[in-house]
Image 1 (cartoon, rainbow, N blue to C red):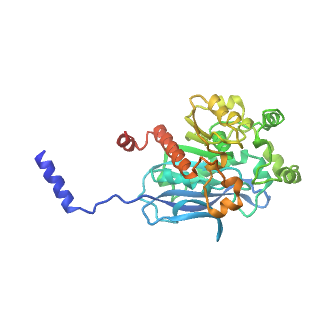
Image 2: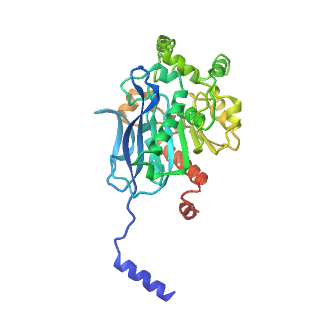
Image 3: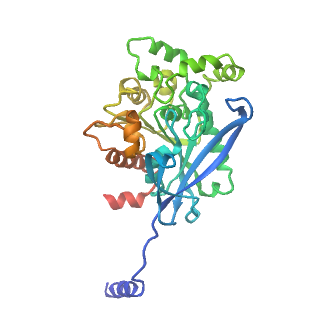
Length: 369
């Protein structure tokens, strides 16, 4: 014991400034495409832009804000564009799907927590239904299962990418989605879509706000009627009942999932991987009774958690003062809710779920006990 004490003293004396390098979040943008499908304009292959969020030791991180220059509406988080990745090693991969009309950067607050704890996160921006594109398409807001196909294409291409494949642990792959991204995550693990089922629900007295036009595309019905007879739409409609299950995905987190009434009972019951469902108690957009609770009740062993007071849009990025003034629907939370605190709590729950499911960060678990 005496010798051990002497050794420790010597080490402290010799290396007084020895510290562990800080882990920050790097962002890289990749422009992928699906050669098997056309873009909604019918002129080229379907684009799938992704944002890769990865560990880096580069400092300092800078605030990432969303909106036009000088007119930013959201403060997404802190990261570094095109930073040099940290040392090469296999990391669990989380595929992330945004909500209606959103973007991967809107979910940076979640990616930050995961990346800083040793994960690689790939955020998928769904063509025609994302804020990063100059134009939105009615098809992208109605034909939801095309988002499901995006997940499989991205996983295949990122797994074969010379730069990023060395960082991917193929045995630990998860999916994470918010709102319509929650639907996307569910279909990526075996959920099957049936829009006739959804139409029946919307014609009943149990219908919820997901049956109506959303704030991101208020005239959706009118615009979709203009293109509903196009060949590209007809081809897509034939694919709605297809299975988009990705066998490599071993765990899923769904935040305030939407349009769950479009997913068949049998397919939900057939999901066998671990699933965590999180929803706000004040979600008036995708009501828990018809969405989150349905997933939790039909998926065997699913975890279910409610965030007291949180609304649907509480899970979006924090808003700037300009955002609070001009996009009040997306930026106004119940008076008792602090969006930053909700983000911290939820991201911690998401990290804990993936850590437990993947048996990852064991030393971290033991230290925290």
